[in-house]
Image 1 (cartoon, rainbow, N blue to C red):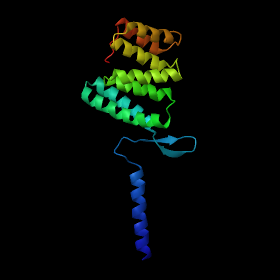
Image 2: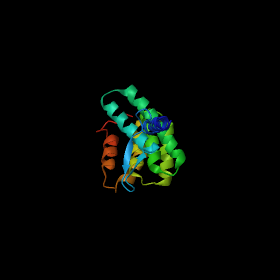
Image 3: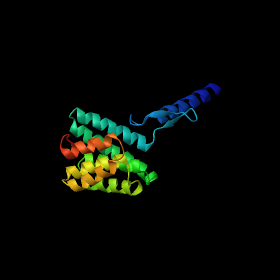
Image 4: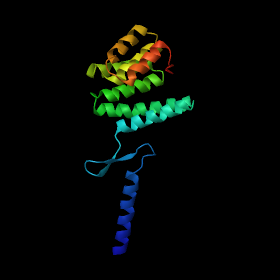
Length: 171
């Protein structure tokens, strides 16, 4: 009887341990250096990783797969945003993902919300400028470039190249 209880306990315990470590491959674990424990990745982390994956798919011209990956990233980022709606980084990635799938209206909404929180956010200003180029609003794109002018950052140069037409923006 005692052996049976131990076997049942081990079976149940191992089921929980293995179940906690997997969610179909999207959830990664990372080391928490502060407490030396293991934490599950946040919804933001997963969304950011999916965006990185989608960018790689785009480089391989796998546009349909990239679009689906951006859409999946949006779901995670929306969950992250519902937990913390005052994070311009989340709003930036939501805007970026929507822009990449061609949903310019929602992209602009998320970028605008992010700029209300942080008007000098480098990423949002670059990406919103690219959105304005894609929607043929060059004066608005130049306003975003002007915000980045003193940042001494690659985002300024990238947006300037898109505006000048020396760098193509896919979206």
